[in-house]
Length: 468
Image (cartoon, rainbow, N blue to C red; front, side, top):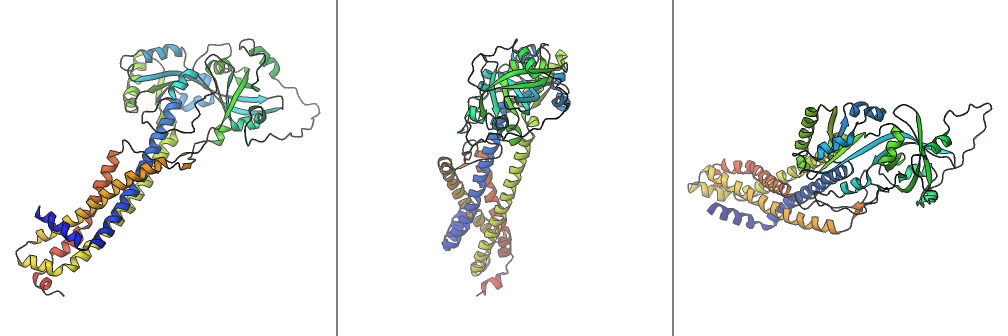
């Protein structure tokens, strides 16, 4: 205890230098904590976005993950409803699962033949009520502003849905949907070609045929487009689709091609009058920490029943998730190394100055019988104490600044987002980060004090006593 008292008094002997040293450590702690909390927010934000839109786990027919995107109908799940019941009623999964819902993805051509415009599209058919329930998942309680909860379709309406703003622009739907900053497409000059062959596909006839099975409102204010796709047998199929709204999907490639529709309409378009299947089954859990356990259970369950199915988690299906996490982790490591080097040289400089100023004092202590280990221990405690004071101040100030950031209303548009979102940092569940930064800086300060402490311990008593 006496060593700690002496170390504290020695720190106060040159209060200005000690204050600057502790301030440098505190600034390093603030930088690492704030950026670490921001990275933590990015991580939980990416996870929340992926889980609320596609669930934790997705069940496919074997082979779809590698080849199914080119021919989804060939890799569809037969009798998907029985598979869903199998998952929902499993004793080991029942308490962990919140939503089990089918999904149909397909590709085709969307056309607005009133203006002779068409565009390839990527379609997603889902159960609207299940998708709304999935979007309520928020395990980490993060703040979500400017979030569109209207998914544009209902369970009892098979013909209505949404499109990306880019696709709406290409198909000339800006004015009917009242989309701001959305120019209408120019009218191209098309020259007639003599003896041009007639189209093999009569879109009007196909559309009229499919309206026999899909009830279309006779007078609908929503703009109408036609969706053309090939059925599982390879025959062309067209359905009428009414656009409720256009949404910015965040990525231009997706924005220019996305069509979100009712599951039954997607099944009608992809499978025609054949058996209506599901391309995938999405499974959302209550907690992400149960994902590996649920994944293993589903694999075992399908193997027991002899089902030709495979399971993939959202990290496999969203490759940019791991890429972004790795990138942000590398930046955090880089910043931490820089802050550690700054703290290292600051402590070395401060303690070296202290050793030079106290050379006579060191000689006197050695002449009175203090061992070299005692001198070394004394300076190590001083370095540790400077690190502890600076790191503690940094943790407190970082917590205050984090609270201010979260209430400052600073907005920015991160990658993959369609609208500006508040710049916030994660302030709960980061106790491990705070403890790691505090302990790490304190340890770095102690290590930095080893060099000057060793120099002080190696001084010869005679040379130290006659030092001027």
